[in-house]
Image 1 (cartoon, rainbow, N blue to C red):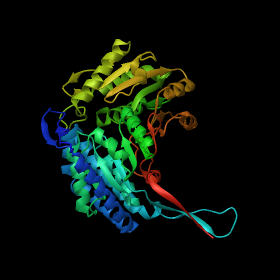
Image 2 (cartoon, rainbow, N blue to C red):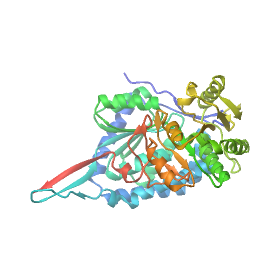
Image 3 (cartoon, one colour):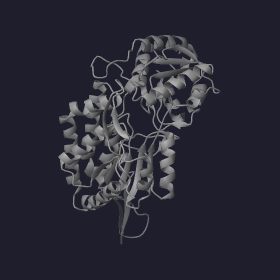
Length: 460
């Protein structure tokens, strides 16, 4: 029996609460047809095009992002409340990802010779497509998250089924339109409005060869379980509670400025934003004082204005969840230094201290503009606290002692360490984590190697 379409996908402006437009969920028959279209498209895409052909089309997708940047940016301002300045920046960064894989396609897919230890002849590895891949994407970076999954996999000849977050249907449709406008063949990139229940059947479908998910720890565990039962390759980029370790600072004002920029970017709704600020004892008091003053100066406002530093949280559900977490943290003994105020979906920058391991918040991710500061007495204590988390995505080390910076960075149990810098993500740098932050990498060479058949050729 064919499932009747529903409207689980909808654009709800978080700044105003207005329901802008609903999009019907695909019926089971429509979803099956989409998988079939992707399977047929993938066979042609991988065999009837060269690497150069695919690179040219990817380059055109990047160009179209730039040509339509204002329209694309305005869509995600409506969908999830990103400020217009940040939205334009996300579109530009996404365009850069498509350019990167277009410019480096030949090198990234080149045959890799293997030096034989004995015997005559030669051997090499040739990278080829796996097949149809499913991407399950989140709402916090509607274009960027898609780009870093789709670009490398389309480059090698895989086809993409893209299930976006239910609150991002308009940007999902816009991305698919760009691929069509660029000249991608039918079936190479297919957008699907599917429910979570339907996605279980998509992962299990033998025509789908791999899954990439960016989202919550709970969603990652569910997808990995289904994929494991069906022997599918999975890449997971999940949550994070990244430490920002301050061990020394000739210019503490500069460190605080970096802390505020990194914590409040995208209204604090970034997996790899610093969320736990771990400060050496002698810098703790001035750091907290300066951080509180800097956070107080940032006001949430209209995301359509270029004068706005921070917009609303992405939805009423996200705001309610963060509000509950902050109130519970205080009820369990944390000190609310400043902030903690909610107005609709706008949440003021907030600073908490005094969180101990018996506080639920100690092990949680706070997905919003909330900073938690901890005091430590030594480098060893800082590292121990940094690693005392179920997550292991990114991390930051701030110190004027370069030897100390490298020593500490080497001991942090995370997928990424940034030393004396924030906002330094780039298209060529691999992104990913360990522990409950997931596994696998996106972007750069390592992102291009996740969903390929590294086929051995041994020639006698």
